[in-house]
Length: 94
Length: 278
Image 1: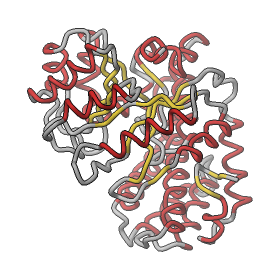
Image 2 (image 1 turned 60 degrees about the vertical axis):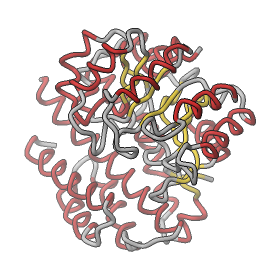
Image 3 (image 1 turned 30 degrees about the vertical axis):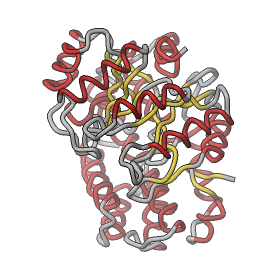
């Protein structure tokens, strides 16, 4: 993952995080963007899974099912962000 | 079965591809390498149902601890102050859970230090077996250096309790207020949650002045964990807001990037906190 790819993905995932916390209906669209940014990169499968699950569940919906799915989407995004951030930090230290 | 910290049946009802999610979780676990988990302690778990809907019950938590090989968890109430505003029922529920899971759940109490009867609530929790205090300046809307907070932290310090203070999402400037609090209660054992990401650079700059301040890693920023001294860090998940897969992955990544020794990794995963909670 190049620094520019990592920065782009980190920025996109940060947008997703706040949209998910706020249960904003724009979250699935932002996650689809992030998935495109991550495609072919290390965290690609994580972000693709997050985007797919977000499309299946209205992020602003109530109920235990939606809440559980939203939390898993957030976890997948966290895992992807950690991987992108680690790539950046490792590059900076090199 | 639980996947990414959630009940698999509930996720299936939401349309999730459980096999794919489990495979991704396993990949993350494989990447943990030999991060030491035997004897580890999760420093940051909420039990109960938060006003915002997040919920975790003790049995689900213990299932998660077993799944990830984590020995114990410090638990305190979610943001559910109850009708009396004193977290009476929520604290009692955490204490009851600790009684049902001895050695697995270390109970901290939660109070609103600005509310009436706050110190009475703390004393009641102590009588029931609480071993620490949790304060949330954002949810309960107070300044960490307020006289009422100083009184609560002093009461905890007299008992030798650690005090976990929210220092992440939504936190205001923290370095000055925490400095005032530490000066007002010398020897107080403070755990700044989320590695202080709400004011990370300013807190890190002053950490050397505060020998009795630690930071938990729950939902922390990786960049912060790589520059903070591992002797001051304690692993945490912030269940049910966070979950254990990424909480462990975060610490594993920080350990690799910062080059922590085996001893430092063990200390972060439990040794540092056990010095305070036994």
